[in-house]
Length: 386
Image 1 (tube, helix red, strand yellow):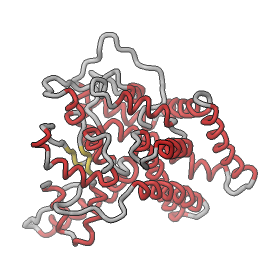
Image 2 (cartoon, rainbow, N blue to C red; image 1 turned 30 degrees about the vertical axis):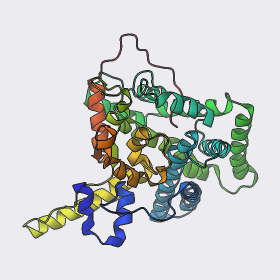
Image 3 (cartoon, rainbow, N blue to C red; image 1 turned 90 degrees about the horizontal axis):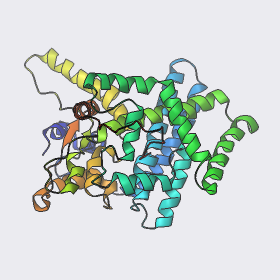
């Protein structure tokens, strides 16, 4: 039983599915809702992306506060939808755990990667499934997934405070983002199979036609509603999620089984904080509740929408069971699996509440990890995973 999650049980039972979604962790004895399957994730991702673009476009046509609210709501929907397309749906497609048919999985992953201008299914599978999931490569310098960290300046042996500074500077750096965007465009238009390049070209020409030919939207509206969320904010979302998910460059000595590195170097990342406990002073208790709600509205909710959509809070369950078909109910499957560890001899599950706590832990590990003498920063690449 998790005391933090159980503290949310002070709220009515009818609200518990919402708290389970927000935190990423179910309450004790809670059961998954009906219809939580692969198709639901796909439809949710498409609806969020498309509706987010439409809402943001409409927001740019309003005035004052309504304009700001419309654009912000559109960004929240489209970034979360695009991230769910890749990090959840396409991710399971390259593991062949989406539909049960390999060709449908490949087509779905290709379609979503075209819509988001990210890695093709072939590149994704080669780097993620065939390399990142190998226990002897996972989180080491040989892991292609570490290239993004190096490009962001998050190198082993760097002081934790400096790592925080480099993270924020990279998130705001035009050079970092333009270089990343160049690699996304180059990887989609200049390399890869002809069909892939033609598909991406037609997709971009479609947007150009909507702007110049049909005049449905203006270039400014496209920049605000599509460019910013799918390029700038999407990349920042990936960076924040990426740095918080594993013990990058961490030591792995003393493991009873080499495969256990997927458990020791992964953890759950949950959004929330324990409900305030009743205090003697009534005013102090009220202020504690106000701070708690403000923290959830302005921090944990945006993190859940922007950074940890889909099954990302339970990403550690995926690394323990990459071939599972229970990923649509990952929160509940993770809890069930945690109660059977004594029979499997796997290490206990780890968890962090609050994205910042997970990042702080990773930075401590990176700071204590000396770089190998022969290490050279890799050339810019389209980040693995994404």
